[in-house]
Picture (cartoon, rainbow, N blue to C red):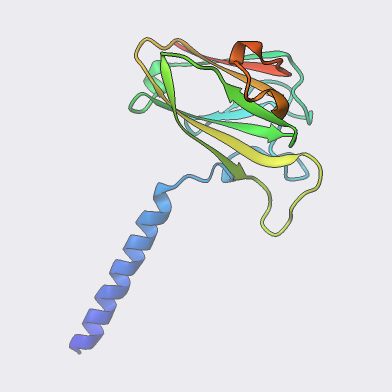
Amino acid sequence: MDLHKILLKLSIITMILSITACSTSVKYSSIFPRNEKGYPKANCLIINKTVYTIGDTSLNYFDQKKYEVNISSESLKNNTLTVVLPGMYAINTWVISDSNDYKVINTDIEECYIKGVVPEGPSPDLQIFKIEISDNCQSISFKWTNVNYMNEDFEQIEEDSLLLINID
């Protein structure tokens, strides 16, 4: 009888630990909008778990040279901002500007494709930027550019698209 109770308690504790451990990590690929082929949609992005549309989502490319997204400072949690951007093409990458108003804490790449099916063509990757923002930060700039330019100074980079996130 006592062994049965001990095993029951251990199994309950194991279930609780596994549920809480799984709920703390965010898989952006599960909430990022996808096109009919399963690729991340162009002209969409996620800022702090909120999806924003910045252009024509039926296209498989960025349809504008410059995009702007406005967010409120109240939406920031502990002065941190998580920005998730579609990779679109393997030859391009997102580059963030340098500033004294914010600091990039972490950058990561997450694959965004249907399990077991690796699509051919555009990149199924999402680029994730975690940024710590100071109180006087008013905007953050990203450039979508060829990977050959990623080691140059931000101002010197020739971008295919420019993304400005304005903080009100």
